[in-house]
Length: 244
Ligand code: ADP
Ligand code: MG
Image (cartoon, rainbow, N blue to C red; front, side, top):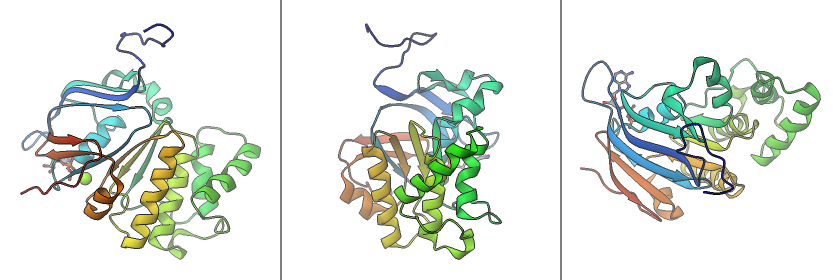
């Protein structure tokens, strides 16, 4: 591949920003949470991951973040072999990943501005830049004017927007969202999903774990369906498949 950056192992930076090759993950108890999962996700894709509770979706997300390491198989993210990352390289690796969760995980005693600015402080962005970046990202997520609110003064939808702003402020190449609308009403769920779509249109690769059938069916994105630790379907412009 002339002109393409090659990684040490030669697997390569390529159009695939995430690659799982025969990945299994067993916890100490029970059946494996993932069992021989292989998948490729291209740079700039928007992918829904659906499946029953317990099918391994969150385990997959945690492996991508290097919160867990695989029992076997290989995971490449941004051209890096995630399972082999040295501990000291993990913080820098994670800087390239944004993550949002169902339960928002905001700092309760800090206001909106501080919750978002915090993500820049820990990577030592100069204060002057933080002061420029935070208002810009808050306006992107539709929260201009809420800087001083504390999380409990915000609706669930607003709290998730803060979490999104925090996930995005360091300009990650990949945004991971683990049931981001799980605690939201239908209107706010749609607004958050539309924001995720806009973020994707800006070039960020987006993976969304969700149970929201209506939204998945309406958005016509790639849909990966998991069941008991394996991928049972992977469709472009897919639909939510019933598991029973
Ligand atoms: P999902 O997100 O699709 O609901 P998970 O990835 O959370 O699924 O879980 C997959 C399987 O792994 C489930 O059977 C779950 O009980 C098990 N599991 C998840 N986390 C742990 C853990 N820390 N220790 C043991 N088993 C776990
Ligand atoms: Mg889960």
